[in-house]
Length: 219
Image (cartoon, rainbow, N blue to C red; front, side, top):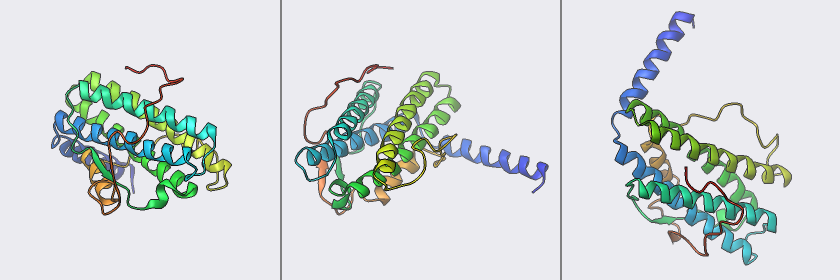
């Protein structure tokens, strides 16, 4: 491919992304985002409970890390609710029980979900920027940065356990997986976390939110 061809292809891709972004309103974007945050809070609550009761074999340090992550997701949820977001659902499904009982399955699934959440906020930041919503774009990047921290933390434990290889911080640029935020919601449905056949879990999930050690609870 020549430089001119690459330039035309890039311009076309950007135009297509911009056109797709225009199909989603700010309300639709924050509604999807707050639903994802509700799912994260709920799923982490279930995992923490299973770890506390010995069903999911995590150590105390790992449990504390999950509790801090859950507190951060709850802070994201509350910000979005205060911004006018309305969850699409507060009931979720677990497509495979091993996700919250088997450590390798749990960690690899959580890594993949964090990558999806990072990509969700990258798409949201782009869409907010297109609409001139500078404050929301800033907050989307703030939240996406925290999701990236969660990804690295989970990868650290997975590398430590020999489940995956390589450094925990293995990317120079996060993956841009979606051209719209709606694609993230569709992925959760496709994977069976929303409207699936597995056991249902309802926000906020079991146990209290533990904010110990977590600061900057507002952007």
